Image 1 (cartoon, one colour):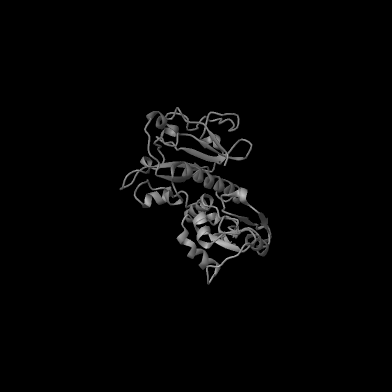
Image 2 (cartoon, rainbow, N blue to C red; image 1 turned 90 degrees about the vertical axis):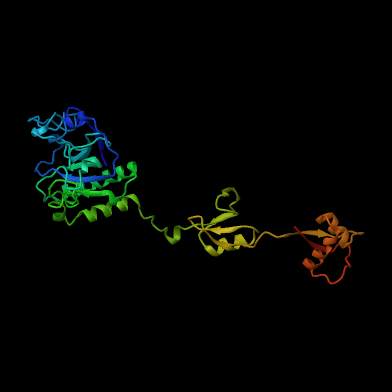
Length: 303
């Protein structure tokens, strides 16, 4: 999105100074064959170009109407597409009128897409994409979702806007609708993370995902990662998302003690476990059937 700002400070809507808490976004189109931003936004900032009729909306009542929107999407003087913010986003605009159930002006940000002759697919695709990106930007800034977006004609059906056809007199000519528009906004807000190619996947061997310093290696082949985990007690294999997909041999729950002359199971238990009566635990762990031990014998001592 190519977003610029030129607030219409001379417009009576801006001067009214009322604010809203944005609860949604209304999409409009201008209803006139004039894709140039300079028709509605002025004065010329060096990019818009000169409006020779000086009939832009930066005046008290443009065309004798009380009307103003938060932004316009259309062509700059060089033919490229841009978005111009024309009111503060939380300013109460005059863009949707009202219906039997109230006025969309009290709750929604409204923007206009400058229409051309309605049939140029190249122009449509560019302004459509720009509109999607503007809605994504506003949704992120105001905690909205695609469900909070509607067009003028939908607002009328809901009883919160005046009777206008936009944008459904235009979008279907290019195989688009407000449903596809909302879907495109949703996809942009929640992009699908592509699955890594098998050849690009690395299996990391660590004690925990967050303990990067403990990493023993990163392997393309899962079997190699498993072997590494098996030879490093207490290590696991993690996928690209940090999920454990294989746990190696657990860290031992005992230490090895070498018996010296004069040792007994009671003595070892008292020194190593703090209580001589725990010698039975040493016997059980080592599979001993008697209390006889000898110098040089290796015993497992519980941790």
